[in-house]
Each structure stands twice: as structure tokens, then as C-alpha cells.
Image 1 (cartoon, rainbow, N blue to C red):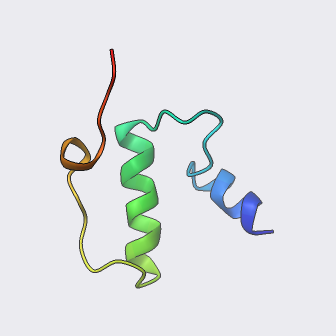
Image 2 (image 1 turned 90 degrees about the vertical axis):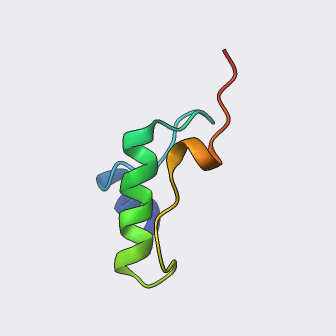
Image 3 (image 1 turned 30 degrees about the vertical axis):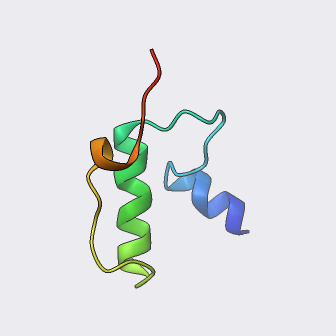
Length: 50
């Protein structure tokens, strides 16, 4: 059940690269469930390799 909830919220990742949109969706879920107190900027946390 938990996995289907993540998939429905576009927070289940098929590969290790996370898009900014998915990252923000995940943060919204965590905020709504009081798991985090504030959002983190995508660029401050995610390191992209080109």
C-alpha cells in the first residue's frame, strides 16, 4: 500500500535521478505529514552530474 501511495504522488523513482518536480512533490508529502519542518532548495541538496 505504501508503495502505491508514493507512485500515485509521483514520488516513486524508477532510477536514482530525481527531477526537481519530483523532489518538490516528495517534500510536500513530508511537510504534510510533519516529517520535515521546511523545504530545502533542490539545487542546495541535489548534485547533478552531466
